[in-house]
Length: 317
Ligand SMILES: Nc1ncnc2c1ncn2[C@@H]1O[C@H](COP(=O)(O)OP(=O)(O)OP(=O)(O)O)[C@@H](O)[C@H]1O
Image (cartoon, rainbow, N blue to C red; front, side, top):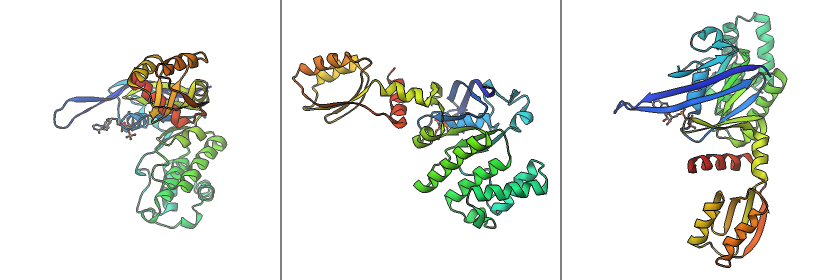
């Protein structure tokens, strides 16, 4: 697959206002994205996702490392590189609040030097696709949050760039609008062949849309994997065990020494057993206090659990 974005060892520090001390928000992040891929950029609060997205779309210049877009260096060949990118950042900064829906789309068609007729056809198509036809003449400020978000994505499509960066596209949307936005993004990727990078906390977005995910924690990449691989990896080794009695301190210490424990709540133990024989080792530890097992199940993991586990393992190691 042809690489369209290459992020190579970027580092970005922010100076704290009062102490002037430097805080490293992104610390040697590298990953690449192939043409037509949808990649999820994940990480807990403050992990460095927005800093990474802003670096890719040229709003921030990394202190170290480089970013290439379609082969162009994002700093040294900024204009050529950025021609290929549009970004939908948090707070809908890519739309004009005092213009109408249609005027916003027209404005961005002008930016791309589109002919009037071509622009009109495209605007009609996007308004229909995004179900915004009735709001064509509405001032953006008067739209609901969900409609504003849809327009922001439509505007990015109007620019017709190869790559679209989305920072938290479903944040603050109700269940139905969030579903609609996810479907639209899927459509865009499948029908329009766009390359999409989505920074999100919404695991439904990742599981439904992204083939691959890059997970950042404390400014560093801790996983760059196909979503399906991660799900399989955790599915085969994760167990949910319901105990008959609570664990003693001694049992817990022994368990923690031997297996990654993902969760322990009252009598429910979520544990990673690498191989089936590990169950016997676990039973050995439980037998110290004759702790019985009520049920034991191999866990059907979803991506949210995988994510939580990865970030937790990283914090422990
Ligand atoms: N302009 C800034 N000045 C100082 N520190 C900043 C600035 N922007 C971000 N940071 C800090 O850098 C770190 C990474 O922030 P960033 O917004 O990239 O994280 P994020 O992964 O997008 O987080 P969230 O999921 O909460 O949006 C955070 O600790 C944040 O407080």
